[in-house]
Image (tube, rainbow, N blue to C red):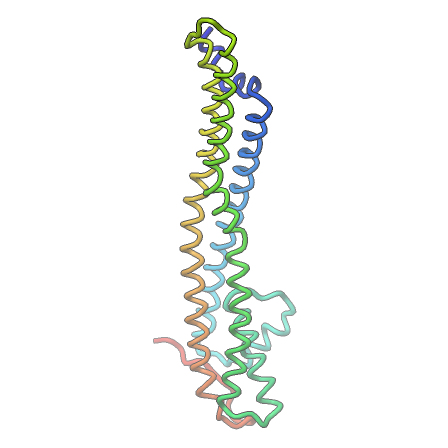
Length: 238
């Protein structure tokens, strides 16, 4: 009888409405965080693969103008390093064709375009991470609230009983502790995922920032070149 009375599903169904609401909120938070984790995992993996592919093409020693035209004529939404390159080189070409700008102004315009693209990419990569942090930090307290409320109800029910036994109070305490367990179940994966993905985002952002500096150095060498001269090209890595 004790085993049947402490069946988790039966305890959840027999819990007070407040505890059931807490459990439902924790279940929803867990499902939301897991959906974010799966989506973010695929997104960051794709960002790393795209960065590797673009760097391979970029450092192959090709002509930057031809590379830019291929991206521009593709008429697709660019992401990551490709978006940073597109925005920076577009501004560089626009200012150079207009004329009247010093080399420092050309470089500053290109860097400004790249920084804007970098901020957009960083915002895209960091999107939803705050939700994981929120779930990880608040779920244990929400579960604790459900536990406290359930224990209060369990002891309140003993107020009119002359002789209390463990069998009378155990179900109420057990159902209350389920709320704590659900809070931890929602929080622990969210915290682990947040720390892991935040580190990965930081590493990708560092690669983007490094690329901005590398492209700036390349454009600086060609900023003073005549417009009809050689198009900017990348020296292939050894």
